Amino acid sequence: MVKLAKEQIEYYMRQALLQAKKAAVIGEVPIGAVIVHEGEIIGRGFNLREHAQDATIHAEIMAIQEANRNLHSWRLEDCQMFVTLEPCPMCAGAIINARVPELYYGARDPKAGVVGSLYDLLSDTRFNHQVEVHDLVLAKDAGELLQSFFKEIRVRKKLAKHQRKLDQD
Image (cartoon, rainbow, N blue to C red):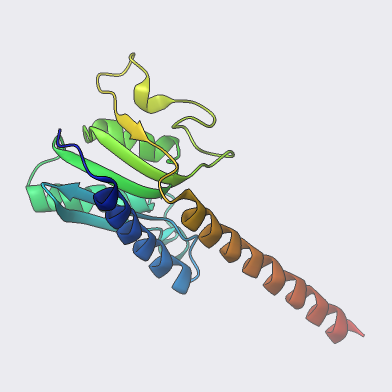
């Protein structure tokens, strides 16, 4: 595995953040992912769960699928994944199954993250593959993006509730 320089790591995480911003623009939870192979981004993804009404359309899954197509292989053995939020159980399972050897993620997810927060699936030696994990890469940027998204949703809900109350009066 090629050791990435800090500048490269931050560059790729910024690319994942760009994917997350695409999700936010269309009202999806702003999570983005990219997969890198030999210095080239070969997979990109962002959440589309609401638009697709499909619980499996997470950023990591989309990025893995595109990377698989580009490499013509389900194995992503010489790749790094960058994702803005700590992966959930489904995505961690997909990372294991795709044989991704290295994961970089931004913000922790204390409610659903299984790469250190609730569990640590990627280093569990009972699986046939373990992943080297690098956490909190540009975590502040990733966290602020998520916080501002959910703050905006709360404001919209509050305004809608207030409008309904005015309509009833």
